[in-house]
Picture 1 (cartoon, one colour):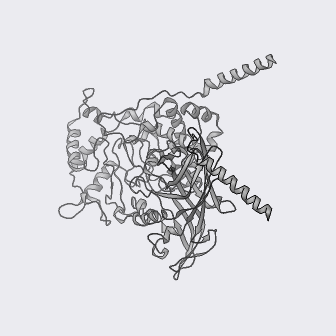
Picture 2: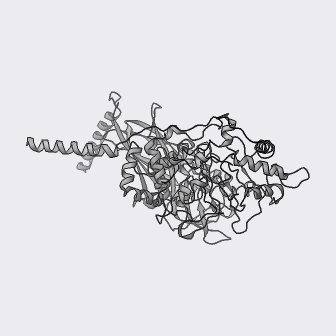
Amino acid sequence: MKIVKLTLALLLSISIVSCSSDNDDDVDLTGQTGSVVLKFDNSVGDLDFAFNTSFDRANGESFKLETLKYIVSNVRVKDSEGNIFMYPTASNVFIINEAKSNNAGEIWVTLDGIDAADYTEITFGIGIDQERYALGADGQGDFLAEAEAEGMLWSWATGFKFMRFDGTYSSSTVTDEGLNMHMGSVGSSLDNYKEVTLTFPNTILVREDKTPEVHIKADIAEAFDGVTAVNFDDGYNQVHVDETETGVIATNLTGMFMVHHVHNN
Amino acid sequence: MKNIFFLFFAISFISCSNSSEDELYTPIPLEVNVPSNFPEMVYNLDNNPVTEAGFELGKALFYEGKLSANNAIPCAFCHEQAFAFTHHEHTVSHGLDGGIGTRNAQPMQNLAYQSEFMWDGAATHLDFQPIIPLTSEVEMGETLSNVITKLSETDYYKKQFAKAFENGAINSENMLKALSQFMVMMVSSNSKYDKYVRNEDGVTLTDIELDGLTTFNQKCASCHATDLFTDQSYRNNGLSINPKFNDKGRFNIFENPEDLYKFKVPSLRNIEKSNPYMHDGRVATLEAVLDFYDSGMVDNGNVDPVFRRDDGTLGITLSDYEKESIIALLKTLTDNEFLNDERFAEF
């Protein structure tokens, strides 16, 4: 018991010391950079997502997926003073693929070279914005080949699928009907790029020797049970380029993400 | 110890000088021809400035079979220079493993001045256009990553990518940029018509050509607009629906019923050489094209209102002489300098 108390006291004092040094305004962070790890964790409501597992919806329909991917881009973080650090554009586009998740069901995105600071919020886009698209091949490196290999390019037109939810759904009228949600933009005629801003529950401290981890929960059911709930039976089991349908899904996706917690390591 | 150090120094010096001769990034800019009678260029050259080495690389890729799954179908397979880079005498084209496409290969010229590509506008950036034929199962049937792997194993491309791009990377970005550099240079603007409108070399049009121009401006130029001879819009021109393809055209892009059977208004440059005509190559001659517009259109449910006559019938009324003179005018759009330009030729 005494040992426990002592340990607690020791821990407490250590954390006080470390806290006070972290928050020390006298420390000059200029020129210092660090990394941040974003951990995307897909779920369906309160259930962790799993492939080939049937999930029920409030409207009586159910679905299971074989493919679950989406594109995240233009990641930037804002510090407590309002300064924004934008990750370098050329490498600021990521395919979040559930099939590549670790045993904890997380897909990690490691961002290096972030200016050391105390950050309070994160913003990112879902899909590819018009500015990046207008660059053509410029600055894309191997991302086009990667997107193609991941099936995130349309095959019949040039453009990116912002999401791929592929599987089947069942309802009172059909069983194991195809479910393919491939929302994206088509050139500049149809722009479905949207951004999300999330506040961190605690400030994250990026330092040369500190790599905070941001655990982002993505409730994928928001795609069809979000701001505008839609029925697969009404045609939303096949979402590709229809202007109305893709707009609904794109807006719904913005409600999919929340920062569950952060670790200041 | 000193000797070893010296040796090491000498080796590194030698290896440096070796690589610098063959594989150094050498950005010698190429001037892109901007004809004075053309509208503004769409392609942004700032993102992809054309250089000698980049153009040469793009040309090599255009004629490179490795871009296809069986290593035998280059872009040029369906885009032959002598026929304004079309698939000569093919209604629709064939590709990998006998695959048959559903559309007529379009000419390649003045692409830097267009904002959308393909008959239905499926490509919305010139850099991305090659991805469609490259990955189509009935055309080249490849994947970008596999092409990159094959190119990376080839000595020529190792050297040429290094010469053409500062980072020297053999990747999809640089491959597509090189292809665009080649395509951006493909400008057809030295036909008899061009020289006439620019008042060059004292070139004049004959009487029948001038009559054709007058009729053309009255009856054709609202769609075949500007000196690109296209307003780049999508229109349903009243072709009957070929049940073999039931090609819905622009509808495929947005699934918008208003787009049913619409296809992009094609340029008319080098039209004399790019037969057959229409999106599926169903019309063999220019005479037959004009006969179609005069009396062959059918109401497929969504025909562009521009073709509706006052009495409700469809078509553009053309007398025999008007047809003859329009064809005479169209032949002045043949640009032999472009069709024979060695810069774009395989050999």
